[in-house]
Image (cartoon, rainbow, N blue to C red; front, side, top):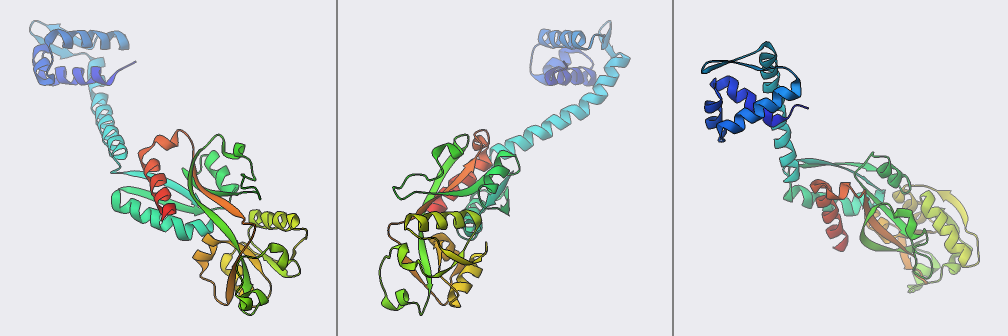
Length: 305
């Protein structure tokens, strides 16, 4: 195998014309130059230099190797500089996938802070709900995934801790679900505090994303009823708009409501509380990449605000 250090010595010898001059240029001893040239000739299996008295000239193989050495060493130098820039966060790329309410609340704050601290780092954003976002991460199609999982009534992870056992998990915040009712709804007029979800058993429902929809059915089942879902949409503004028009009630995470700023609706806390854990995920190897680590840190800070 040809080593870069040997190529540098060969190029110095070819440029200076002798081992001693090459040693001076490289800042090493003449015997060290001689040893590395022997090692290089052994590696390629053919003489590279012809020694005639005090002078040296390249063989045909030596000339070919020097010609290629210039491009190889220039490429290595460029690669070293690029890696150093990435390691020092002067450059770098992060592919981020987030669910919509995270994209409109946590992500802008985190990316603005990241750009201010490390303007050379570039982040791309794609939207996907879990579990698809987690699949994209495991398939190598993103570097960081924002995801969530719901707790059960006892506060335990309803999906099971093993769901993300192979990933690096950075908790961001705990998001509580609240009910949305029209402004003229009896619960809105009453100005009541927290209510049991069973009080909404007879209402028509507007359901959200598939995972949220499944969670709604489970919560209602635990309260002893099956919700009558008249409308289903992944679009949170559409959910709020349908509720505001008096077409039903819904349950949404507070983070989603923050991103929607709904009109014509009233929010009602639920008891017992239903929560979801918002996290940022990455692969163990990726967690050591400086740009990825910095992105995770800013997402954690955004979640704490």
